[in-house]
Structures are given as structure tokens and as C-alpha cells.
Length: 204
Image (cartoon, rainbow, N blue to C red; front, side, top):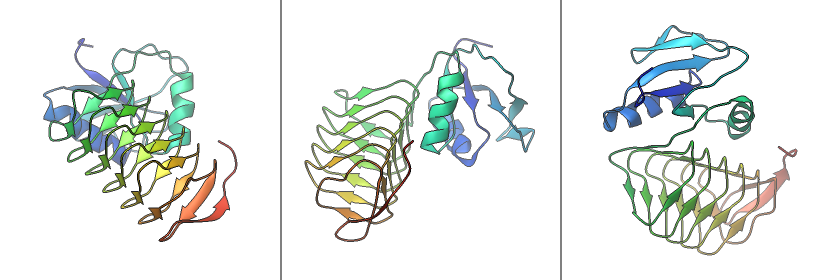
């Protein structure tokens, strides 16, 4: 495997988007690994069955589910890389953790800190001083105002809006289109406008 190629783990729809992100930067995929392959290729890239032990360079876990992504990261003995689409707008004053992907149209403003193995999805916006824990997923068109903190493993749904300074706990779920005006506890499922706690999920 050439040094500049990337191994993707997970033959999913999310994988297809990461292939496109890499392609926008003229980075090739070495191959795609999957525990139970349902196809032989994805967008022209070979899909291979996983084995018990991995030692790869330049890996991205290409699975959208935060909990499953964390479990796979834990079992891999690999060096992880990042992928930022060439049409994302990311300030030079942003910190991005290993394994994280930032998709086309996303805007990430100065002093944002993004943890490891996060997903900043299509056209999502993170304003200044936001902090994302590891394994967070900010869905398409979701908007975080300045100074928002999001705990590990939380999923911010498509089109959700979070006002400035809000703290969202770990492994929470913010529903599609929700408007978050106050802090969110760990493991809470929050929906609606204004956002309200619907229920709590089991710990990760």
C-alpha cells in the first residue's frame, strides 16, 4: 500500500461520502475493509473482509453510527488520519482530532476544537469556540452557535439549531430540526422547538 493512500473501515453509505472527500483532495483509497461485506466494490474501490488483527496506516472508520465507530476504533491497531473536503471552509485556527471527517459545504470557524473520530456532515456549521468531544456526529445543515460544547458520542440531528453557549452532554441525541435553547443532560433524547427531553437512552 502506498503511503498516501487511505484504508476505509466500513462498506457503508457513509463510506461513499468519504471516498468523495478523499477524491476532492486527489487522495486514493487503498481498499475498504468490512466485517461482513455485502458488495465487492464501492465506487470502484475493492472491499475486503476483515481479519482478527489490523495494523494499517492512514485509516478512517467509515461508519456513521457513533457507538459502532467507537467499538471498531478500539479494536484496531492502526494510525488514523483525517479527511476534509476541498469545498469545506475550515479556519486555520481549528483543531481536528484523528479519524475525523468534514464534508462538503461545512463551515468551521476559528477556535473550534473537534475531537477524534467525529463527523461534521454536509453544510453543517460550527461557529467560533465550539468544542466537540470524540465520536460526535453533527448532521447535515445542523448549526452550532458560538461556544457550544458537545459531549462524547452525541448525535446532533439534521437541521438542528443550538444557540450560543449551550452545553450538550455525552451520548445524547438531538432530533432533526430541534432548537436547543438550554443545556442537555447526558444520554437525553431531545426533540422539538424549543427542545424538550423526550426520554433517555442507555449508556454507551
